[in-house]
Structure formats: C-alpha cells, structure tokens
Length: 109
Image (spheres, helix red, strand yellow):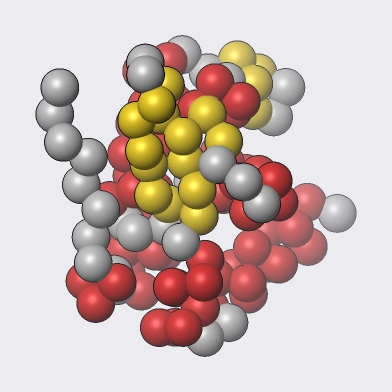
C-alpha cells in the first residue's frame, strides 16, 4: 500500500489550492467535508451533482485535494477517512478558502 502524501502547511500554495478547486466536483467534495465537521469516507461522495462517479475518478479527485493540502486522509481498514485542513489553510492564507467556496455557492444560486 502506497503512503498518502500530505504536504506540510508551509508547502501549500495558492496555485495548488486554485488548481484543486478549479473542478466543481472537488469543490462540492471539499464543501461536504467542511460541512460535516467530522471525517468522511470517500464513498459518501460517490453521488455528486445527481450522477454517480466511477471509483477511479473519485479517487483522483481526493488525491488532487489531498496533494493540494486541502484535506487529510487516514486509512481505517479498507476505507479512507477524509477531514479538512481548513483551520491550517485559514491561518496561512486568511479568508481565501472561504471566499472561493462562497463564490461557488453564489454561482449555484
């Protein structure tokens, strides 16, 4: 089993965050994890925008979010439990993440 890569907070970049959140599916996944306020399994997000995502696609979305530093993943048996790194990102970049998520939410109205 390959180790999961989680960049240190000092290595998280604005460019990485913007790239990770350039896909609306990843934005919805991140918003769902933040809203839940507790670790979420990947399977919770198999249905996104009323369509079922293939497991390989879902895995890739989580990998992008993780490698950008937006989420932390922990193996629990055969599942990955995902939590947000929102507090760390807010400390480093201020309200950047909140502004991005608010903009996506406003666009959906």
